[in-house]
Amino acid sequence: MSSNVVVTGATGNVGTSVVRLLSEDPEVASVRGLARRIPDWSPPKTQWTAVDLACEDADLAAAFEGADAVVHLAWAFQPTHDPAVTWRTNVLGSIRVFEAAAAARVPALVHASSVGAYSPGPKDRAVDESWPTHGWPDAAYCREKAYLERTLDTFERDHPQTRVVRMRPAFLFKRESASEQRRIFGGRFLPGQIARPESLPFIPDVQGLRVQALHTDDAAGAYRLAVHTDVRGAFNLAADPTVDAALLGAMFGARPVRLPRTVARSAIAAAWNLRLLPASPHLFDAVLRLPLMDCTRARVELGWRPEHTATEVLEEFLRGLRSGEGEPTAPMQGRKVG
Image (tube, rainbow, N blue to C red; front, side):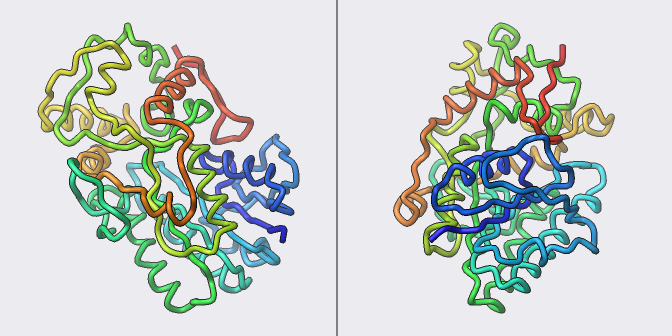
């Protein structure tokens, strides 16, 4: 049986991969991509609808009419200096999506949660999906992801007929996302040449800076499986190996040098306060405390396995960063700087 799938945030890092994969899927009859700006990109079986989730008048129920699944990916990372703005899009906009999915009687809702929803956890072992999702309260991104976890708890209680899946991926990268992610986290003037091995004499080794990564296309594969598979609940998504100073040092041919947390955070805070760096020190605090995730449930219940290692993901992303890679959508436009 063919499915009609609606994807919110369809022109971003994850959205472009999910739309492309669904458009090539013989089990999918149609894809409707929702985004603030219609792209100059026409994948097979795909129609576009301009929608701003921050707008109270957005007619989402009409856009969801006849859908077999809604994949909710829309998210605003900026402005980090004004969390009320991101709250309107990320939290209030997501609640509108959930309510519209219920009103349109959509059978399945697949929501993009994140490792950022998790409470502080261990770095020496992996946790499963039962780990608490209270986020790190100082970081807007984590606060918003955690709030939506509680919102979905209530939604599932009130709408048991809707199959709800929560994806909790690690940090997502692909070659085409390099320009967008540089603008979001490093600033539009960060030169791509900084990604060259010869440009880094050493790698800062900060206690707790040990995280997981995943190729965006591999995450998209998990979303596609969630659309077609009769599963509910949360799924961790990450690839091996764990990313730390030793792995980055080997990639760049640079020596890891221990850097105190306070020194690293002070430098980030100074750049953020001067509006030279978009990524906030609060997000840095959260990253140092994120747990490592066990992905057994995704392997067993979804049959999902990443096709790229974390090392391959980062190498591909760095190549994209150097060459200013992008996609033919407004958020993903390529731009080479420096």
